[in-house]
Length: 148
Image (tube, rainbow, N blue to C red; front, top):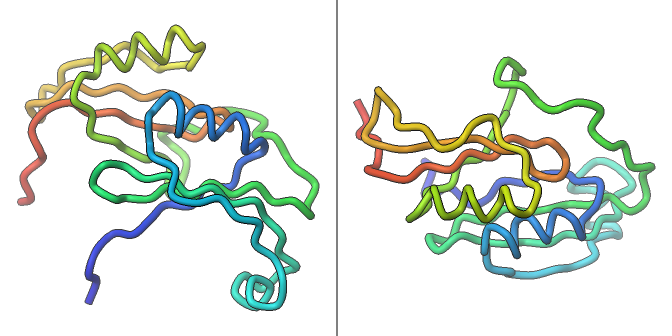
């Protein structure tokens, strides 16, 4: 039934900071940026919807849709998300050189849980960091995980 994975949408408090993180620091390519509002958007979301939406994509065309709501008072995340939270808790990107990315992001004050670590379960190195709204982002370098 499902043809492919299309995108992940995240609501952010500051689109400029998120654009810097996803587009500039992670080098995800800009696809589009639009202000969405009106009858279609209101019916689709079930609310009075007005948002500034930036879409960026990876080299394999997976899109991250970054949404800043314009007509709703912004709430900054009060605390970082945890691996123990329910629901969707992180995004994961495959990278060619995790050490290089880690050093670059650290230099730009991105907060990490740890430096890249070699996994005892898969032939990969991996680490987690926070985006500007404390969303968890994982990076993996190495072989694809085989399905069981």
